[in-house]
Amino acid sequence: MTDDEYPVFNTGQPEEVLPEFVISLIGELIRLIDVQSVCFPFNNSEVWRVLVKEQVHRSHLSNLHKQVAFTLSGPETGLSFDPGDWGGEVHIPYMGVRMGDLFVLPEWHNVFLEKVERKGDRAKLGDIVSYGGNIPEEGLSCHYLLLQRDLGELSFAHRHIVGGGWFLYESNKAYVKTNAIFGMGLGE
Image 1 (spheres, rainbow, N blue to C red):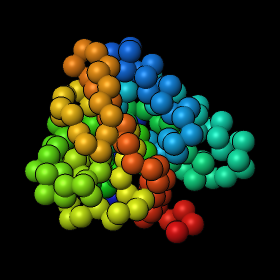
Image 2: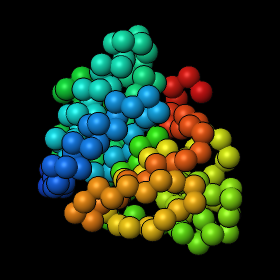
Image 3: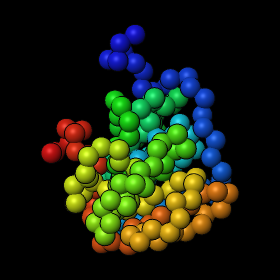
Image 4: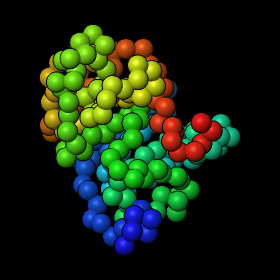
């Protein structure tokens, strides 16, 4: 099977289980004004239903394309269901993950704290999850980072203990909308 034939939906992969309090928190966070995009690289239909419902709602209110109204990006391995069945549209990256205002980091994803240390006062949340070169100063960093590990106190983010080993980091820098649709062919 070639990459072009790889199914991104209805993959048959097992769903990933998340605690109910994490699912509820995601539902609360996506209603915030400074969450215009979400990177959720998990195969969990309960969360995806919540995300797609918000996407469809925002698209109807704004009369914008679904991915412009509320950009959603999933796991590179695809999803075991088709969000289109619920009226939504989800970008499945060819490789890796795509940045979002809310980034829910899976356990398998590396963090790059040494990059944060090198950048000092210029560091931002996106630097923690980006293994590539320098993230541009504007538009390609998350504003919220939800993960199941403790990164300790960060000078550029507020740390919230969610429970069950989960932590939410909220940038204390001015909000800049993540350019999450870059490369998707949606009005670049």
